[in-house]
Image (cartoon, rainbow, N blue to C red; front, side):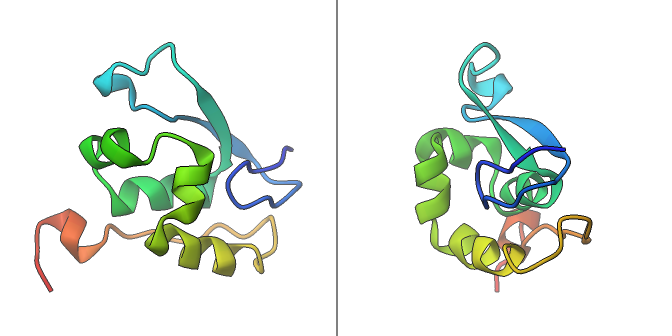
Length: 96
């Protein structure tokens, strides 16, 4: 078990997130250990192109308005809780 670098929860299972997506040239670049819900939320909200353009550091991710709301919520959840993450309507290609 580890600590998520995005939400700060401890005793969570983490995955490696490439801060610059691999397909955008980040294969050997900086990575962060994120809990599964945080990692899934990033990719549910944003395309790799959007991530590469403006969300390439933990600070950038934490400052993002949509992710900040999620981080505030996830910090209150127990480390063992895995939730279903759905792609945002914008991400699916549908406009609100």
